[in-house]
Image 1: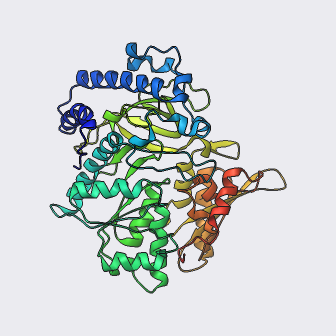
Image 2 (image 1 turned 120 degrees about the horizontal axis):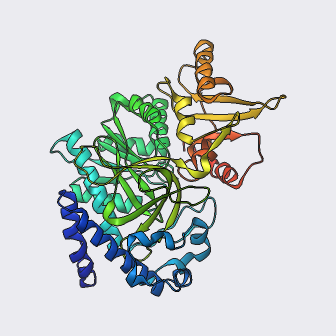
Image 3 (image 1 turned 45 degrees about the vertical axis):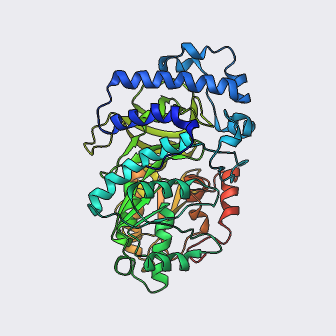
Length: 470
């Protein structure tokens, strides 16, 4: 693992690395974990109250030295709107201490600063490294695979983070940006072939767009490429969507990690396809997304995180806006930490026929028993009687098939409880490619019952000339 040479990080390394080693080996006791969590919570809150103008105001009167994890509910939440309003005032250390500067994409609001120092980089990457080792050993044995990383923008952390992780596991890495005007899809596909890449890290949309672009060039993704593993992140990928990627490439698809620019990597995947919380780095809570009420340590709710790494931008009781399931670790893969399943964003709930659905329920219904699709979109209308009506558009090779379309419309209608018709198309609206930048709902759902909101408008602006020919 790469480590900084500066002595200024020695105290942190002396605390963190032995704990991480014992954690990975399964030797860390619950008592040791609680001691670490309490110690780091007090350290982080004291640092933030002293160094961050935002938290100095927010935590005024809090006795950091007396805090325990059980006291978290007494502290105020931090929200995405707080980050946008505070900007650099959220930082707890001087920007001079940062080793990287990143920012959020800014597609739905001001781009917020996300600098990272060596403490945050080491702690976050350590857990991603363990996940990659677990998956690569299962798929490739002792061989270190060649990895291609396809990130969203040049100021996103993905390239640096995964470059370091690849170095940790001994893999060569190529950073390829298919939507870049310099690279584009043809060059990306050429590099994938020339380098015989074994692993590609990207969004689900990019994985499918690459397959479609390859077919447009007369190439067979399964025959003409060496890719055996897709590690995907950035947008929801249900097992049904992962199946489309597997079918297109003859590969194995993993939801590789869960996190964000502002929160770093919260959970990493294992060889069994499950996400594991980086427990040494976070205290977690589950709350009711509407009321903020505590829902207990396990179950389903909005995830709230408190960072335990005293870096440049620790967040305290940060409401992620994500609905997740947290469960005790029963995986048996060898990776530690509770199991996390991301259900979707709290704002992505969809009301159809008077019933509320989560994003994954809609995607599952749309892709149930569908094979070899390159994407989908759902259009929602209201008929003259005021009833909701769906049009499901599927990008499927082979053109229209009235019998299959009618049968699938019946399946979707049965699952979602509203009338439905299905279209098989050769090309979808490019807005469906924007999920990782904006949201699943803005990219996949065209809801004509309501006025266009700011996220949908942002997705349409971003779509522009995007597509597999870019």
